[in-house]
Length: 146
Image (cartoon, rainbow, N blue to C red; front, side, top):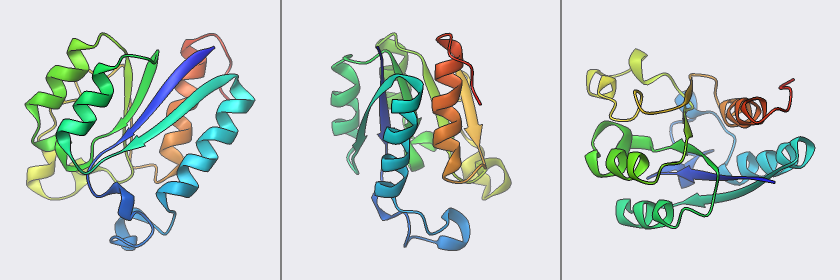
């Protein structure tokens, strides 16, 4: 069974209340519940991890007990060479997810240390972007995406 680690970076624990005009009203717990349900339909195993601490995220990735990752690095996308190096170094493919489209927002969000090493990207699709990412992983592993 393909194991998928879903990594959410700083401030994503505030989904549902943080800037709902940008990120919507769906909570991280609701996203995670939806991913677990969809993973069961697709025959995938999902584990979710969120931290506001860069080192904790790097340590979790270094465990390498997964086949694919879905990564919404939040603000670390625009600042963290260390996260980029970890994602390259662990040798696992990942789908980069962003609820909003960073390229359509502030100038500083156009810096992205992850986009060129991601196997796939899903941006600007709201919370459903996570499910789309899971479907992409299933399709890459031989299951048809719906």
